[in-house]
Image 1 (cartoon, rainbow, N blue to C red):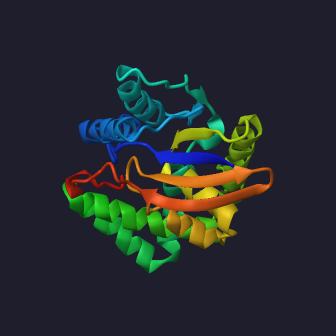
Image 2: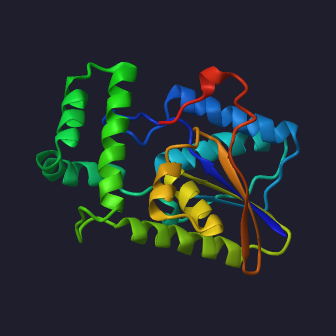
Length: 239
C-alpha cells in the first residue's frame, strides 16, 4: 500500500495584484510543515508540485528544512494537472450576468465593492466567490473559454492517475497543490457530488494535507485537513 499526501500551499496574497506569491505568514507555515516532518521522521520517495509559484515555493521551503537536516528530498516534478480551478476567471466572467439576474448576488457584489480592506474585504470576497462558483458548478453559467467544473475534476483525476502509475509499491508521495485539487481527490475517493466537492474546497487550511492510500484500483481517503504542525491558531488561514 502506498501513501499520497496532497498539501495545500502556504498563505498567498489573496486580493493583491499578484496572488500567486506566498505571504510572510505563508512562508512560516511551510517552514513549520518541514520542521514537523523532520522531527517526525517523514520521508518521501517522490514529490510533485502544481504549476503555480505558491505551490513550488511551499515545496521549496518545506523540503529545504529536510535537506538542511541531511534528509532526502526528491527534486519536485511539476504537473499542470494539479493547478487550482479557475476561480477568478469564473468570478470575473459570470458576475456581471448573475448580479443582473439575482438580487442576492447584486447585494453581495455591492458589499464587496464597499469593503475598505482587511478581514471585512476578505469575507465579502469569499461570500461573493462562493455564490458565483455554486451557480457555475450547477450549470447556470458557463463558457467554452473557461474550464468547466467537470473538466477541472477530470484534470485532477488525470494527475492522480499519473502519480499512482509512476509510484512503485509501498512508497510515500507528496503533492503540493491548492484546495480545489484536495477536494477533487476526495471526490474520487468518496464519490461526492459536484456541490459537495465544491463546498469542500473551502475547508483546507494553508499547508494542511489530505492523506490517501492507493494500490492498484484502490484509492481511499484516510484523513483531510490535517495540520498538526500549526499548533498556534494564529497560523490558521484559509486564503
